[in-house]
Structures are given as C-alpha cells and as structure tokens.
Length: 78
View 1 (tube, helix red, strand yellow):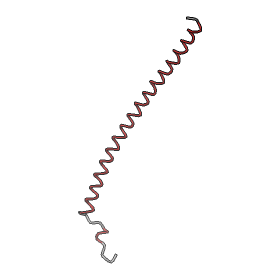
View 2 (cartoon, rainbow, N blue to C red):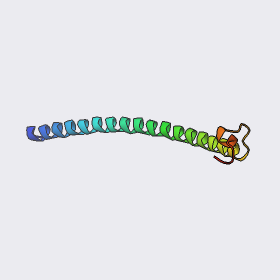
View 3 (cartoon, rainbow, N blue to C red):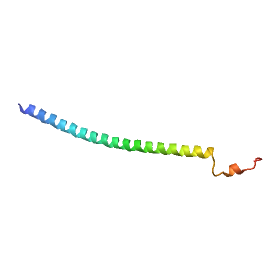
View 4 (tube, helix red, strand yellow):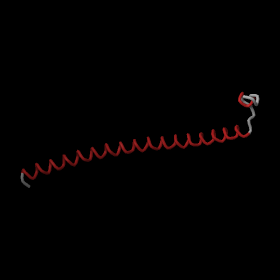
C-alpha cells in the first residue's frame, strides 16, 4: 500500500469516526425526544380523564342542582 493510499485510508477512517459520533448523538437526542413525547402522552391522558370526570360532574350538577344559585332564586319578573 502506498503512502497516498494510507493517507486516504486514515481520512476515510476519520470521516467514519465523525459520522459514528454524530449518529450516537442523534440516537441520544431521539431517545430524549421519545421520553418527552411519552411524558406528554401520559399528561394528555390524565388531563383527558380529568376533563371527562369534571364534565360528568358538571352535567350532573346541572340536571339536579343540590345547591340553588342566586339565578335560581330570582323572582319570575326578573
């Protein structure tokens, strides 16, 4: 192998090493983003469940008001 071939080989090795480092960094970033997405998904599911419970509670309170509001107590002429 000539000196020129040896230099090319080292240059290619250096480029491959740089690419491998960049790939490792990208894989780490993808994992971090995946973790964020998973946390957000769980938060959305929790908030959705809470929203449904609150909607049901509000619906129930509108159908059978246990505590009448001032609006309910107004005389008919208002």
